[in-house]
Each structure stands twice: as C-alpha cells, then as structure tokens.
Length: 120
Image 1 (cartoon, rainbow, N blue to C red):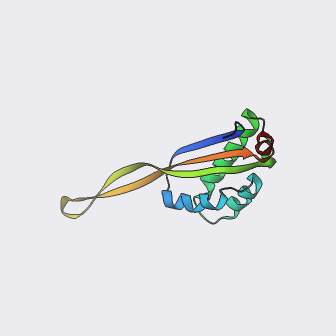
Image 2: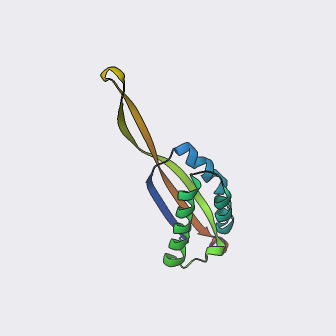
Image 3: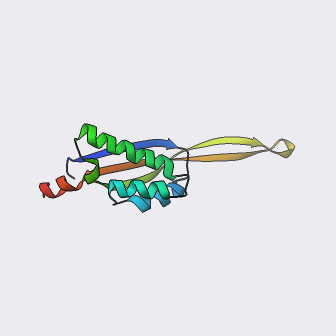
C-alpha cells in the first residue's frame, strides 16, 4: 500500500451490518464526488452515517495528507459487526423476551489517483 491514503473509522453505529453493506457495496471503488452524489440520492437510512464518514475521511485526507478531494477515490470500504446491545422485554406470565440491537463498525479508506500512478 502507498503512504497516500486517509482512513476513517466509525464504531458502534446502531445499524444492521447487512443494511450498511448494501450501501457500502455501491460506493466501493468510486471517486469521491461520485460517491457523494450516489449516497445523497440513495433512499436508505444507512446512507446518512456513511455519507458523514466519507466527508470525514476526505477532511482527513486534505488536512493530514494534503490530498486533493477531487482526485480521491474510495479504495477500501468495509463494514464489520460490532457489539450487540441486549435488552429484555417483559411478556405475559412473568416471562421475558430478548431484544437485540445490532451495531456495526464502518471503515472508509481514501486514496489519491494522481499519487497512485506516480509511486508505480
């Protein structure tokens, strides 16, 4: 891997891994601006936290690595399972029923297309 990459990680996002992966699969490998327009037009609830994460990764790229946002593309985007928040719901006859709220960890890595070809 080249040194010209900016990462951002969001942990404990209150969302199913499968719902987040459905959105992440659409933006993997796309340019930064194309990914933003795709995420803004998607009808899914999962696209908003991912949009915020892409913005944050681009801010990290421009501030920390001095990369140009327009030349960046999403080289790696992955969703991993997080902890499961468990609660008990009271039911009839003194029994209870578990409520499981799943969380996920989302990682976005931006690379610069221009610097990618210079290093090779």
